[in-house]
Amino acid sequence: MRVNNRIIIFTGKGGVGKSSVAAAHALKSTGQGKKTLLVSTDMAHNLGDIFEVKLGREIENVRQNLDLYEIDPQYVMENDFEDIMKYLANLMSGQGMAGLEDLGMLPGMEELFSLLKILQLHENGEYDRIIVDCAPTGETLSLLKFPELLSWYMEKLFPIGKVGVRILSPISKQIFRIEMPDKHAMNDIEKMFLKLVELEELLKNREITSIRIVTVPEKMVVEETKRNYMYMNLYDFNVDGIYINRILPQDIGNEFFAEWLIIQQKYISEIEETFAALPVFRIPWYEEELKGEENIARIVRDVLTTDDIFEAKSVSDREHFEQTDTGYLLKVRIPGADKNDIDLYQGPTDIVIKTGNFKRNIPLPNILRDHIVSGAKYEEDVLRIDFVKGEDSDDQ
View 1 (cartoon, helix red, strand yellow):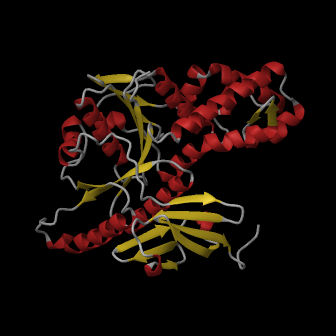
View 2 (cartoon, rainbow, N blue to C red):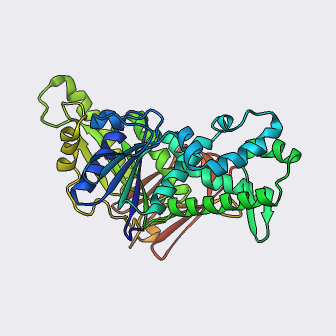
View 3 (cartoon, rainbow, N blue to C red):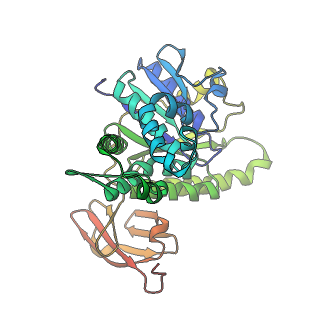
């Protein structure tokens, strides 16, 4: 396996240009002499359109050091993980389901095998960098959370010696009431569980995997970007970059765009304030459609100008959520602050922290929208904010 191989996952709301940004990183990587794989897990694949080539179900080489791969989950399930598929199909046969072709219909199954394929490619060690163009925000979050969720169910349902294992919730309650796994099946379950553990560890390994969010300076997109980041943070994924795409030039010289420039600047400022702890990249609005290597290379020349663009960033000032016995804890690093000068305000969807020239607008994940601040303490450069469920909230 290559020692310094990296996985960089690009996500964002549909239509923000994340495929183009991911493609630009792939070109930059190959320009550095690194063998690079650009992968799409979005069912609405467009890597072939961007590079103006026809892609099939297998990895295709399009230039020196650059391979493209549009994952077909059903094909991957049937051809790369045949043993797991046969095992699952045998378990489901007791429910009258036809077999392998029905497994792709189960919630989360396509996402799981897309990730397992990326894990397999990483373990093969053929590539220095794997760059992943993910589906829109909500689907990406489901994709990344799925290994942890599936492992949780397997641990609850299938204790194997000292290893706890669990299986997919939608099928477990009915199937295993009828057909409990025999010794051979339990070995298969244990292997799958261990593979899920490997997958989860890979996705949360900050030296290998980074999540980077692409956005545009528009109200609805910015709000989704903030929620996306907070959930990635809550689940402990390493978000180490924000890309603001389609920024209009200030000297456009057209009165029609004057109001758009003001609106864009407002949301650019909001993004940079909200994500002050992260590297933020500005990508201009190009007059031509970003298709073909020459046009994608413009992003490389204009934005991806530093040689350390692929290094895993250690973002020490980022906020961090964690669950506690009484609710949740938010930690925010504020080096050198005076605790008597810290102001804290909780709004309906955000918490605002001010001290001196420091201001952080931190969007709250939906899971905390019915929680209130119960206390705050500043020590060793870290502000610790405790949340408990509000008295008027629904206890369901």
